[in-house]
Length: 90
Image (cartoon, rainbow, N blue to C red; front, top):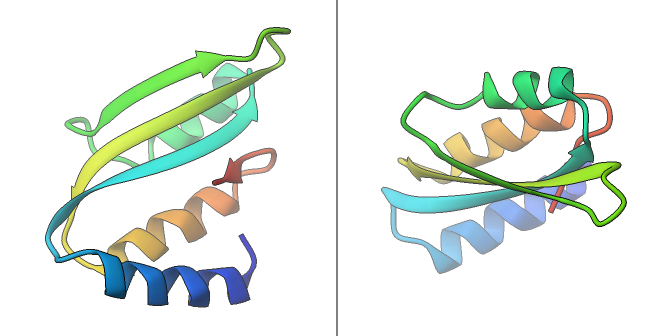
């Protein structure tokens, strides 16, 4: 996500959520265990992970649910995830 997208996301999160709240992160990444491990390391052990592989098996859709305390916490996670090469935040 680019910076201007974070600004728009920040605005939408402030309008649509009351914090703390369960937030659902969605990512698409190549089906690479290294990338999945890097993404997994951004979240605590108690976060709920689910993933689904594409029909061709090259990509994986990753959904993560976690209780977040603020808009800034959500944005911080997205910024860290966007630094991982190949990860696309939805």
